[in-house]
Image 1 (cartoon, one colour):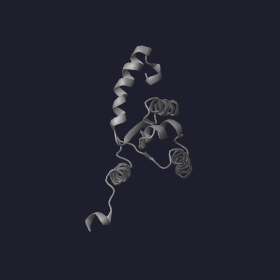
Image 2 (cartoon, helix red, strand yellow):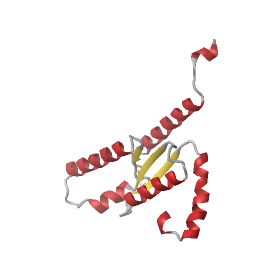
Image 3 (spheres, helix red, strand yellow):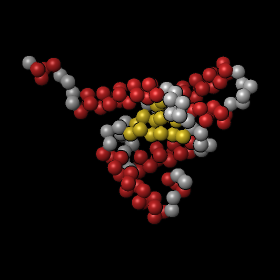
Image 4 (cartoon, helix red, strand yellow):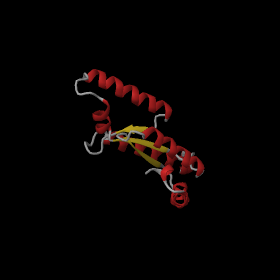
Length: 140
């Protein structure tokens, strides 16, 4: 089960484990796109982060198992052009909602892994610059 399906006493224990989230500089939230309730799960994680006072942390949402998502949602006879249009609209929706902090991958097919690496690297750079601001004046 997912967080909300845990018995009450385990939820509190699980949340204490999640307290470590507060120490993280960047959160990677992996969403299983093959799960029929992936949107509900995403909302539960968002709510849990708010409850942990960790919602201000930079989050990269990784939509994984896109290969399975496509198998589950597209008929085999559907034209590739239509599939690509639907996927583009899906990406656009989530990029708007998550302010561009998301990547769509298939780990098993190694699809879009380079984009994931680049996104993580960029977020690490941003955090590094916030923590250790570079100023030319420091060197003169």
